[in-house]
Length: 341
Image (cartoon, one colour):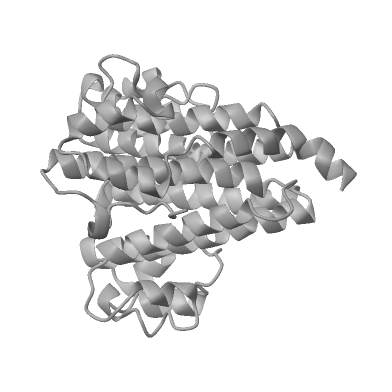
């Protein structure tokens, strides 16, 4: 315990302080009741997100996304390797999102000025210089410019598929490789840290798989075999057998295959995926909340802090998008995935 205390006293204190600055479920519901996107942004100026919204000319949705990197960078300063290296690796999923934007944009030959506003600044977290990548003339050129990065291998392997199926093959290759390496990195941690971290990554990976299976089968029209190949092998409750069965069924019929898992409650016959998607995110939020209860000196606390911010930020982005479309207040409409306190 003394060793855990020495490693995590500062990290735990910083994480608790940051968690106390979250808006929380009630605050988000109040924001969702604002009459317009502009009113939501004005209300956010009275919250800890005000500093994130300060840069002039930056869209609120992107500015909010950059807040997750700020929180992550703050926590990284409180840790030492290998714990610091793991949390940093986790935060790079935001860099993967940037790469996906670049892949789509370069494939469509969009000019840099069209892409730049959609890239999230990752100062102190990101490993890539995005400006040279924005100058890529085509996909092979983009892959060449990434030659010294960890992303080059999976991108090169996916190039043959890209020539026939388009940027989708590259996006999937990047994501699968990233999350596979992230799970493998848990082996560098102590047993207590490894258990805590996998307790968070397991539900997250399950939720990613569920959302990907829906997208690949129902939006992209992939076969069950292709869909299964494009899912993560790791997780908590979604075994290979369950993933294979889900890949053969529409989401409205998932209640049976998901029996005896926590996810069954999110699904009912003949329901679309929007409502279950929010319920599943709430389960990830609840796992993050649980990680902060009980014994506090482990890596699960700073990781849960980052994940909590990421979920709340997605809630805020969802509220802003709904207001831009003229949607009403959240309340029972289910815009908010953050766990209510």
